[in-house]
Amino acid sequence: MKSSAIAPIETKFAPKPVGPYNQAVLVENWLYCSGQIALDPLTGELIGGGQVEEETKQVLKNLIAVVEAAGGTSLNVIRTTIYLTDLNDFSKVNAIYSETFRGSRCPARACVEVSNLPKGGKIEIDCVAWLGN
Image 1 (cartoon, rainbow, N blue to C red):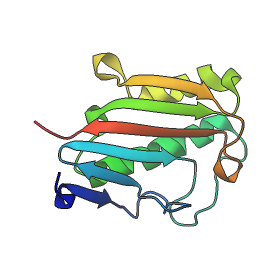
Image 2: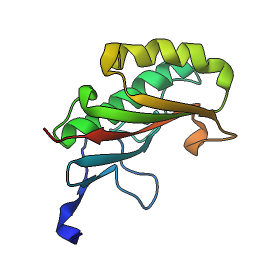
Image 3: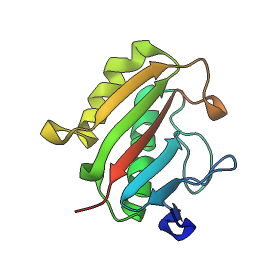
């Protein structure tokens, strides 16, 4: 594959990466989005005050901003992975997640508990989206 078929995606409507990676990489029609945590895109600060519901809203807002920067919408997302520091938050996250992804167009998904996330966040979500016809 030619390197020109691989393009980094960046938007000011999602936080800058906290390490050596892109917000997303577009490979032909496939968009691979890096994990998003609840950072405010303007300040880079973690928001939510430790409330997983508020963090989840910001994470999804950040993630969809990256998908939109590549020309897609939430309907283009075909796979997500949710990382939680406490799996007991699963139902709270599900309620908010279902506001973004609903019905028969919900992406495939995995959800795992992890011991820690960057900047002390409670949730991180990444995704893969198909931007083809």
